[in-house]
Length: 320
Image (cartoon, rainbow, N blue to C red; front, side, top):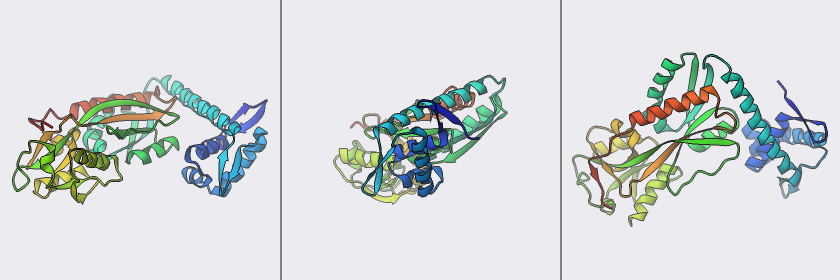
């Protein structure tokens, strides 16, 4: 269904074209906007030319091989954000008028959230809202945000590490779920099983870590560097359970989130980090959708799940 809004002296502006303009503003190029919305760059360019005629003002200026938005276009993008948020509120109000929470909600979630909390959250939702269907896709945070803005998902579960703050994203509303501590994991036997007194004592150990292009990997490397050494990363893997298994086999040490503490492989020991290192686990939705009954239900379920699955404090903790 094509939705039209009357603006700018009574001229009719096509909302889909306005969304295209917003994507060019958000992503910086016609090509990236086209990829985000599953169009060709030429189709985006044509539609924005039509939008210029509708608006009666110049919206894009050529800069080298690229384009940039005019001040009038930036103003139009701001109003587009407001219209999209209002549409989300309207949908939420309509859903809230129903007697049951139903329909389908699509969630993008990073790996450890799926491992640790999804099953428990789904159990809660099936009992409380049997007519609600939940679809979950495992996604890293950046990809999940893209899916949220492009309406591929309705809610995301993300993570944020100290010193690696997530950027403020227009049109997105965030709620924190839990401050999840990070634990050092060492084997119980073998050459790397000695309990360290300080984090610096781990300088000669091989490590299993997330790749350095991921927040977890960046944060873990920064932790080592702050302690005065460059980690010898022998195993690069996104999967913390693989990291835990490598530790149990005596091949490495690692850091994993407390939410996965109960899932750590037998033969490992969990040790608290100095300074109580942690990550923040949160949910985000498009602005205006925060009061949608399905969103509220899923947020409540995942909040209950992460607190239920949270591991107790470890018996051992590094002093510094």
